[in-house]
Structure formats: C-alpha cells, structure tokens
Length: 158
Image (cartoon, rainbow, N blue to C red; front, side, top):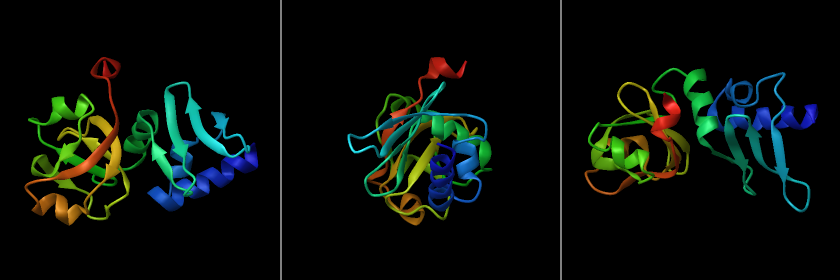
C-alpha cells in the first residue's frame, strides 16, 4: 500500500502541481481504496469523504474532501475559479458555474482541468471540470465555465 500511495502522490503532483500528492494523501493517513474488478484503484476515501477518483485515463477527479485539501495546500489563485455572489447559491446547489459570473481564474487553467470553484472570500463552493481556458472564462459572457461535479453542503462548513 505504501508504494501504491507513493505512485498516487506522484500522479497528483503531476496533475495539480508540486505538493498536491502530500496534500491529498498525507503521510501517516491511510485512505480507504475502492478497487475495480481488476484490482485497479478507483476511489480514495478519507474520513472526511471522497478525496479523488482515479479514472481509466490516469487522471484524478476531485471530490469535495480533495478540494478542501487542495484549497488549504495552495495559495490563491492556484487551481481556482472565483465566482460572484449572485451565482453562489446556484453553484452550491450543484449547478454549473457560468462564464458570465466568473470574477477570476488561475491563468494556468485549461479545458478539462479539475478545478475548485470558490467565492471571493476563497470559500470552497464546489469542485468540477473546467470547460474553458482561464482566458475564455474572463472573455465569454455565455456558456459553462466549470461543469460542477460535486458541491459543498453549506451546513458542513459550520
């Protein structure tokens, strides 16, 4: 298991940036790993919930627990899409983040990247997949900026 976690940390560092592996899979913590029928890791689950799922394409998809860990590990704007207050209740309800409500985004974001959707106070609202590059999120007034996969329950933030 230790070697497997080391490999998963390496994938996380490659996908999200240096330090992401240690943030998602801290040393000393042993996440529960759900496996495919072939024995391949599929989901890594901590006490706080699903951290990530490991896709057949070799990339992680974030769960809210993983999003919380990355938000703490990386300073803004890394990996973040900031939305205005008017869209906050919709994103928290699991709806997609629309381009016209994006206030800021990490310049490194590309379509297909896993991102954190936060408000202007850097409170995590949701995690999802970027549909646009950061430049497009700033320029477009229509369309989906982030396809929300999982939103944060406001009650869990208290």
